[in-house]
Image (cartoon, rainbow, N blue to C red):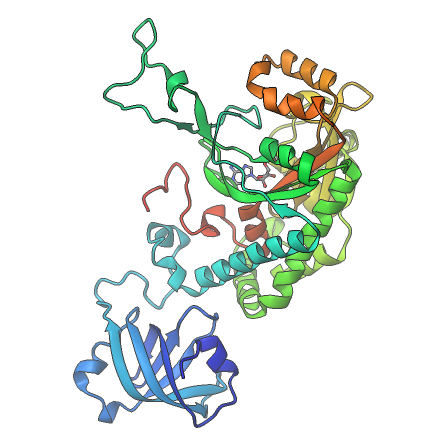
Length: 476
Ligand code: 4AD
Ligand code: MG
C-alpha cells in the first residue's frame, strides 16, 4: 500500500509492508535515510540493511535523489521519531549528483535559494511556506463560498487603469519589426492590442463592481500586475489579489467584512497547519534574535497569529492618525525620515508601522482619507474633502488591505473623473452602473503575498511566492 510520509508518520499499522516514494534529505552512516515527499515538514526515517544491500545502490542514495523504498513499518527505537521503515527494497528513481546538487543539508541564504527558485521548495522553510500558502488559498475560497459570495474571474488583459496610478505593463500584439506608426512615423502604442491600448490588470475591482451590481456578493482571486520598479521587501511586479465587492454594503460593513475574513483564514491555518507553523515559529524567533533589540518583534509568530484572531482591529480616521503622528516621539533615538507636517500628506510605511507596532499595538483600520491622495472611485464624504477609503495595517507588514465604499452618484463621479482629466468615454461601462440601478456598494483588495508573509513570518515577499517577479527575478 502506498501512503504519504504524513500518513505513515501517523500510522499505527505496525509490521505492515509499505512503499514510500520521495526525495532523500540525508543519508547517514550508510544506514539512515531521511525521506521527504512534501506532505509534511517531518521526514520519515528509513533504515537500510547496508550489509545486504548492493554497494552500487548505496552509492546512489544521495541528497536530492528520488527513491522508492519498500519495507516494514515499525515502532522506532531511536529518539526523535515514533515510527520508521525497515527497508527491504530500494529503487533509485532519479539520481542526484552530490557534486552538482545545489540544495545541501545545511543552512543556505535566502538570496542563494532565490537563484534556485526551482529547487528551493525542497527545503524545510520553503515547503512549509508553500503548504501554508496553499492552505490560505483554500481558506479564502472556503470563507467566501460559505458566506454566499460568487467567485468572479476578472480579465487579465484590460483597457482600464483601475488605480489611476499609471503603473501598468503594456500588452502588445504588434510585430516589433512592423509596428503601427502615427503620422510622424513614431510607434503608435494606442494600436498595441489589435488596434486598442491595453495593459495587464492592476486590479480586478472595476470589473468586480459590475458583477456585484447583479450578483450582489462577488470576489476575485487572481494575479495582478504593477510596473513599479520598487525593490522593497513588500512589493512584487506580479502578485495575487483577493477582491471582494458587495452591493448594499457601506464602509462600516466593509470593515467588518475585512476583519472577519482575515481572522477566519488565519484561524484556518492555526487549525490545519500546526506542524508547519511550529517550525516557522522557531525560524522566526531565531531570526528576530539576530536583530537589534529595538527592531525585534515582541511576539513570536504563533502569538502574533493568535493575537490577530482574538483581538479587535482598532478603527481610526486618517485625521486622528495625523494628530497622533504629529505629536508623537517615534523612538528615543530615531525620528521619522519623513515628517508629517500637514493634514493631507500621504502616510509612509514608517508611519503606518509606528501606529500599528508602537502606538496601538494591534492591527489598525485607517479610514476617511483625504480625497486627493486616493483613487477616483472612492465615495466623497459630506465634508467635501475626505473619501470613504480604508486601509488595514498589520504589524511587520504595514498595509495589507486597501478598500473603500465606491462613489455611486453619477454626477459626483463624473465631476471627479473630469477633475482628474480622465476621458469619460473610457469608463462608459463603469458609469452605466451608476445610470442603471445604482446602489451603495463597497469592497477591498487584500494582497495575498502580504497575508502569506504575515502568516509565515517571512521577512521578504519574494520568499512567499513560488517564482517572484521583481526587477531582479523573472528568469523562470
Ligand atoms: O491598495 P491597492 O492598490 O488597492 C487596489 O488595488 C483596490 N482596487 C482594491 C479594491 O478596493 N478592490 O492594493 C490592494 C492591496 C494592498 O493593500 C497590498 O496588500 C497589495 O494589494 N499590493 C501589493 N502586494 C504586493 N506587491 C505590490 N506591488 C502590491 N501593491 C499592492
Ligand atoms: Mg493601497
